[in-house]
Image (cartoon, rainbow, N blue to C red; front, side, top):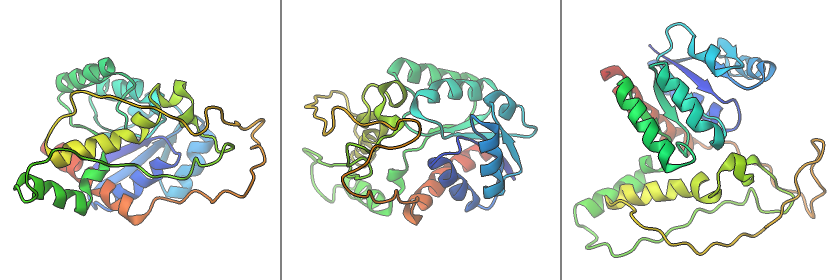
Amino acid sequence: MIQVAIIGAGFIGPAHLEALRRLGDVEVVALCDSRLEAAQRKARALNIAHAYDSVEALLAHPGLQVVHNCTPNHLHAQINRQILAAGLHVFSEKPLCMTAEEARELVALAARAGVVHGVSFVYRQFAMVQQAAAMIRHGDVGRIFAAHGSYLQDWMLLETDYNWRVDSAQGGASRTVADIGSHWCDTVQFMTGRRIVEVMADLSIVWPTRKAPVNGKRPSAPFTRRRHMKPGLSILRTLARCCCVLTMAAKAA
């Protein structure tokens, strides 16, 4: 059994856990969060044996082989560095880091460590994306001149909807482009087999200023917001496929 740990017990961490458990030959042995009480509570709820409140303690867990980094964007680079320095395989949530310089550094660190590394661009594993990529590759749709797409979400619809992703210090200077636009960019590159080499942007924002919670309480909204949906089976399946690829590579390593 491959021994895996997850750093980050928020929204996406449990989705990674469910995907990993579907593989059959992987055991998630530890969970890490910034607060020990929260980590222990979530570990009990998810039936994970060990809980930690520091990356250093987690990386010292005996027999650990792979770490999934499911933390907020601004923490990705440093935690990925620590995982690589420990000589462990790493599967990072996107974006890999906050700058191109950090990305080049991490790739070099992974090469020196001789470990398997991956970023959670799961949309390339959707059956329709695989089919489209195959059709383009085989010339079934002719020459590609342009690609158009969008990423539709409504969970930040209202002025009173707030999340760390809208804070540039945590979500990154490009905000939406890096957080969800990176999925779009990767999907287009995967389907077309071409790299994005130049960009031009016409930017706009619906809510230039948002009403952040005060003392843990949200401002009153004009109407009740729909509760955020839990990860659906399609997301879990695509995560499982990505985890499977990483698992097979880790076995080979």
